[in-house]
Length: 310
Image 1 (tube, rainbow, N blue to C red):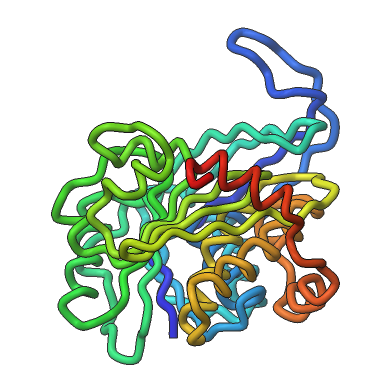
Image 2 (cartoon, one colour):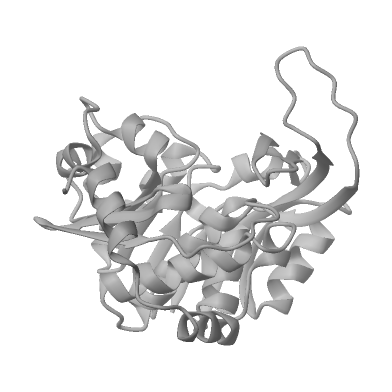
């Protein structure tokens, strides 16, 4: 069973021709609200797209914004450990999605900042603890140390990007980052493969957007080219990748198999709008993978060259 400890936000999403530059006003198109937050997105991905037994520890305010968040998690069969706070509103995110499917996000954490070390439940029966960085860093560190002491595999998605204290990194088994986040956690950013090798974590996985993903497990490196799709909205794709990767590892898949399944789920998430609303089912991921040809030599070679493995 997987425990996801992290953030839950209500996403306020505006579609626009392009993401505004500083000082620019852009006339938007459709406006919608969606359940989101990195933690909640990853919990839904674990359960819905990964098919894993999943619980989530989250904090929300006592307001109407909390209701759609809790309902979305419940509908995805995520069991809830909910902290209700009177002092802070439920977290919110303000997202602009451009016509090219790229996005820009501003988060008001609210109740997410009240998640504290004493809120961690008993970890008996959990195989993996999955966390992000939209909750207090001291809390994330305390949870990681507690999980490590109890033999639970600690997975950290180091997003949003920030430097990580050595005691946190020492308690992490699997670190998941994008390229920017990877550069933020290494002491001397150089090439991608060198950066992966610098991190004192047993397994590091880096997502590379439309190129795919790469990983280091011990001293061995792996790559997985992306699956091409017609992208509509990339919001939540990275969270989908994280949740499905951990779900696959929880179910005994190898790292390469987990990267393949997570990449497929993330690709499908880009074909629908919203964060949690775009996360596919496990059956849809399996059907999508069954239709995919083996990666062509050119795509593998290009990814290897990009990663510095060529």
